[in-house]
Image 1 (cartoon, rainbow, N blue to C red):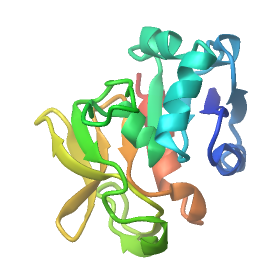
Image 2 (cartoon, rainbow, N blue to C red):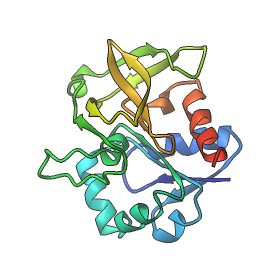
Image 3 (cartoon, rainbow, N blue to C red):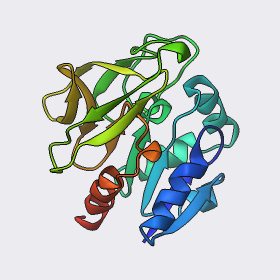
Image 4 (cartoon, rainbow, N blue to C red):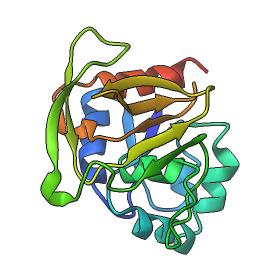
Length: 188
């Protein structure tokens, strides 16, 4: 199984390391040819406006949309923003793959970054979640399942194919979220 990590901008390197820890083949996705080799794609954290523009510059937006029903996608932080149907930002064009909306930097600016233990619905162990200028989910469709919350706020969503995460699982020693994502891919 080949797991790609969008490698245009942001913290893609840590995700590549996690995939390799789980003994799967990781691919740095920078072109359409890279993308078409993938069974799953992780869109990392970074700066969502820049990533959105780079998707167009690298001619990847259309290709991701063309294969979104054939592969599984995990969006982390900025990647979550890109998976969403959020339309209120003039400088951002999301992929609108999952039916939810976010407020960018909803948990605060860079100075408000924090770590918090998170209980996942699919794991007995809590994991440490790192929130860095994290998006806050403001609404989601009833076909979306919430897999984790903090302070009664959803932070991890799935539609059964794709996964969207407000926090950065790549900074945790716990691999539960990556295993969950790989199980989504294996269950197809």
